[in-house]
Length: 460
Ligand code: 4AD
Ligand code: MG
Image (cartoon, rainbow, N blue to C red; front, top):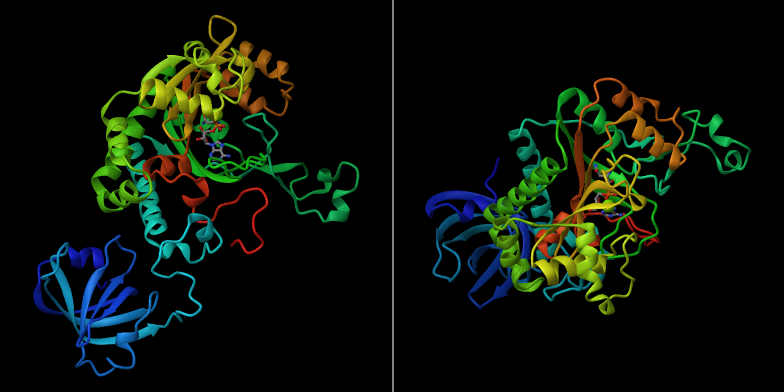
């Protein structure tokens, strides 16, 4: 494979002949020479190419190279006298591979707003910020698999098409092969592809539990879908969720693993993506690196839901939504807890059972469940998890209260009938993690192709 810019920038100058391909970021003509900054996506930095007027296509092509043009250059890697780089390329030939007409190419040298870039999602990964997001997202993805492999977890591929509503919120997209006309008939799904109503999954948790009770420690990581009509900067209709599930693990163990994971992922990005993080720290979210260092060096603050409500009641005039024991925490409350009260990520445990799904383990008080949410500055909820109800009688009673068909979920109850053990897990919203790590304020800018209510017709 030909070396890419990231590699070349880390090598010593030599007389060796190199070939380099990429896209022109800028081209500055200084009369007898041109300075071309070339990028290839391998890293944030471009490499400087010096093109002398002796090149045969200098006058008609090289000196007019415009932003976005794809070129192939050959030459040698020489020591650079310029600041901020140790090497540059002295070109012997430059060939245009793909022009980019500056009169129509939407990406020019100036900074574009993220809103504008959302309207050109096929071109936005070429920009510095969105390019950096993509590299950090990929690094986090890889680090997740590395972390779990090191801890003896197995990855389980849970299905995207399912008939169970894990979160019980009814926010599912129906999957059907029926025509509009057939859908209008009575009990249409009996005639449908699966012979019953099927949906896109909201969570792989219930299936992950199956494998936790055979393999001990597992995780699933993939797209999940929610038909919630939330037009916010932290909700998507299609998002990636990481869900570990551990047998012989109580709520404390669940929190320990989640905290160790998040700290490990942040340290990995701090160590491996320094240039990209520096860009976000300077232009997107001032103080980002300090915030990330705090998050990975200091333990997360822990409090119960009741303590959180008490803290918030003291300042409730600040909020749009009321604060009261029994209501769910809103993003503004979550952010206040970690930004103003703790100054770092917070784990809130023991939520009222009425606001949490059926599978969470009931606490002794009869009112709360062994839930834990991890809240982070700038975003709010990053993780939602719990110890699972492993007692058959209590789980059955809770499912009946929630109106869940016991027949439908008999396989889930079997996990409690046969060899039931305490077990726990959590779900981490991958885009929210990417938001936290990059400081990007809108979730639509940290996933390549966002899906959300009322998408533009031109969306890919
Ligand atoms: O809290 P949630 O709904 O939990 C579950 O789905 C559990 N079954 C997880 C488990 O215990 N295995 O979702 C988990 C996380 C949230 O904390 C949030 O980070 C993210 O998923 N999330 C979303 N991210 C983007 N857009 C949405 N619409 C999201 N809904 C949840
Ligand atoms: Mg949640």
